[in-house]
Image (cartoon, rainbow, N blue to C red; front, side, top):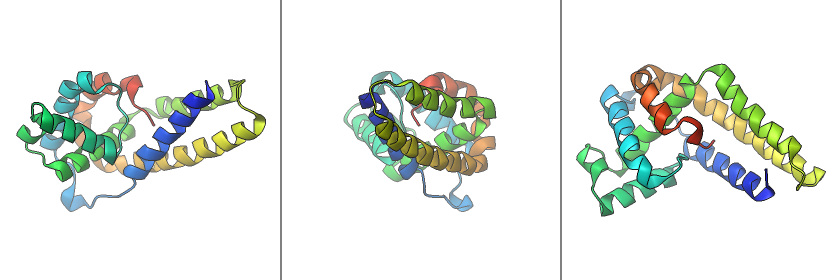
Length: 170
């Protein structure tokens, strides 16, 4: 793993965890229709958007790009805020549905890459490890929050995995 890749990965972890850190009250909880529409839109927009890393800024970028093109998000009934909320809740629900071993495996994979890196000094590795550990704690918290949305997201999990699968950046 190059140090540039490691820094991008850490930045992605930070962005995702900070953006998803807000808890949504059950009154505004994700509906099955929203989860279905988000999944459908991710599937349709994915080819144009490239790899998926979720945060509010990415949600806004997708919304803005779609506004300039086909307005699929708007046509599906979302405004910017409802899109951001629904996408975030769907993503958290998807994290919650990941099997424990697959979820833990991601962390192990990141740690193994970091340990094997020969381009970083031991001090840089320690700094990166601290960042990874902090981000992992936040992502684990997001996954915990996602349990509130897991049952709603479950019917869409297979298609979400096709879209997100190994392309999801934590």
